[in-house]
Image (cartoon, rainbow, N blue to C red; front, side, top):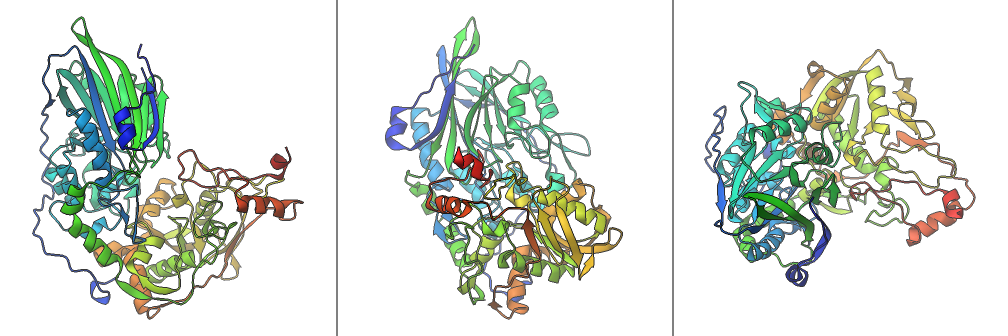
Length: 629
């Protein structure tokens, strides 16, 4: 039986801030761009990736007791410098330069450390500016930092398949995902596992990706052409069987949330089903936790470089066999550590080009779009409820206007990816586009029946919790991510929160007429939602009538369409407008004492709960009856 105990290294405590811990046994010529150097890259097309199962050796055998040290980053999303280019500001707990300082300290204590990145590495934060290079700077940075393993995340497939293939080939460590198969012969796309010999101890690391890439990339099947993605459980089961007799210690490196958002196997499920794992390093959820699940420690280091997940597995040789005696796991935060100067110096050109690109002027904003970003406090930082998800705002109106324009659609639907999204009076720059539209999505136009459109609207309205008597505030469903809440334009409707999910959309009209369930409407959605609608059975691939990527290639991304629309339709002048085509109903605003409670929330005397991961704000309504108690 493995014994657990909480242990903090005195050295790390002196040098680093230690986090949560636990132990246990548009068209190119129409807009200015930063010039990119022309780089000739090798094209791999359908050339298979050559898989080499090679044992990585670290240290020499001889001891009867060994400590195996693992460190992992996850969801770095294009961050090398501690900087957020969408807002053109420093981000003190982000970037490889910060995580590498932690890793260097850990290597001083144990030079045989195994370093892993758990995916969603090359997308976001202006990283696409460098997709033309043979080796992406994020991959080059991992090479410089001597990463042993790279686990592909779902966002690695946001781009052309050749892009990810050449970066896989140029990564100096091992790319490991057990549940990606080549359709043609059922062979592995990359290595399913990596074996290590650490001071005589045999260690196997199994990598996993979410199986939903075909749904999320449904609008661009060429991104995953020839590949299939399995549920993690059977893939892990098969891989463990293949590894029989080859390892003493088994570690998981899984780009999975604790529980899967679509019902597939999550990280906690793997810990429950496969007790062979001594440690599971996770990602994807952008969460910060260390949790013991059925005698296995599972941890995730947040996102962007907030922390480095670390695990020490202590083993002892007994009767010729290595026995796990203890596992210690913690997340080491990066906020207060100094950025690694080697990384800063090496990638200064990447940083400078990203800042230059972010500050290209697109037009002018005549007045601030959302005067009150936080619905209760009115502050720019959302701590209670984001106004953008409580009422119609000029930001969502702009995005939907752009999408309707280019897709020539009757109706458009858009989500807010960042609660603080806003545009302030002044110059409108490329960084502002990235701030209001975080992802590199493309635009799709689909034909959808009125009946299925209403089902889609009900699906989206599941984002809200049902209002109960005495509720002072509206709250959000903790199980639904904010990016899965769409707001519709071109159609008028109410969301009645006294009704249960599936029965909330009321008073629906289009051009003053009731929604016709049998009529086919033209709907504009992003490529991610295009996959969702197919998964929900509300559209078929042949219902697509427009694809901005097919029409405009990289200039067809929604961000570029916003730029083109502002420059060529709005003549560079952005003025906020909102048609208030939807509203929430059902909340009693006449409850005695309501204003006093709102004032207490505003002052911080009452805190509105957020999800355990911190990714969803406002997950429980403040109720007057609870306050009285």
